[in-house]
Length: 248
Image: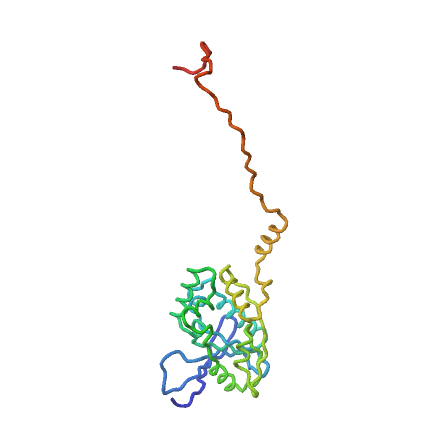
């Protein structure tokens, strides 16, 4: 492998122009190299998002995933701030790959009592195998030594931080469009992500919870046993000549 450099060019977006930089060795052009969208002229302390590829959310537009919303919100925040760096890494399925991600989904959907972190363990996979050396290489190539990282994952902050590269966590909340997406966010919170669970509820979730508190639970009806009187048909008199409106 030769020296890895940044290849840079311009792109246009409906909300404004930006630069793209691709980190790679010109002698090895196979695969998808790490890249970044650079907004404005980033300086120390700018917003940075390190985003891992997600086919389900970004291409298939699944509402059971929060990745697409995080991607769009990050770019909007950087444009509003005037500068920032969005790094995109080809690390599908928290670094385990697309097939592992699919198997994890399959296992979780067949057993509603486990989340994707636990399903990875059952498959013999690490919960998160992503690495961030390439991200740091891109940021250093942009002459950055201190960034505000858009993430809810303190472990990601720790993985990037060194004595000469400072990372400050900048949490941001994406609520999730479906119940499954919010269930996944709640699982992230259980595994240490700084996600305020109370804010994951939609207005309808809060209304339903309020109704459950205000309206008493319906009690099951009480079953009353009524006495049964036996009748001896043979001893009953037969009425004769009783008028009837039935037509024979």
